[in-house]
Image (cartoon, rainbow, N blue to C red; front, side, top):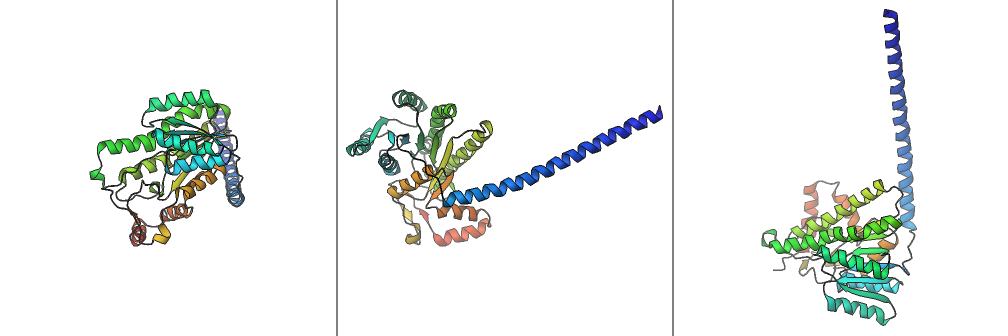
Length: 320
């Protein structure tokens, strides 16, 4: 009886050892595969950055929010010039109609809709109307935003709530309205405008920076959710981080070195956004070098970057 017990114990120990060896071997193989795939992904990304494939937007339907002026208007004009069909949303009916009028003047196709993106019910109703009238929306550009600039203690509750409603929550409501169709067709692209204020915290922009950091997190989380829940999905996400653009939102910018930090022209910003969308870049700043500055700033001590920031002295004064 004792011999049988010892034999059983010996067999259990041997089986456990075999399991341990198998588990270790599996982990080693997984690590090797990870290293190989890791470097393949890096090489592929480098090759893609030098020879990107551009998506043809001719004949595609592009929905843009905030098309009445600034970046939104330039995006609509430039997408139309590439042969896209434009769905233009803006709260300012007159300005939005003017954008559509300019597009139609040179033979483009565009349709204006008045929408206050603060109101989810307006977004949902208009989304359903657009789907019925125009079919599948290929590209959505969440561009609308506001940018009050003054110290946090001078911001009113209404200002802060409006900023989050327009700059963040509208992205979520529009994504919820149109993403199901993209998932069903396994295609489409969502472009979200964050800001370089989504890279760095700046005085006089505490709520605004908060909204732009939120957009960055929103898009990164959405990317991971789609990747894991729908492994074969072909939906593309692009997040844009423009520097200060000369649209009137940034009323009192200041720079120690204007040649280095001059305002971006709306036409140039729009061109950069469209280029990023057409080449399926996930994250890009305008100008592009700000993305590299942000990455560098995360690996050096915070007090060291503050010295650089104080030396450059770039930001915005209060608009009050």
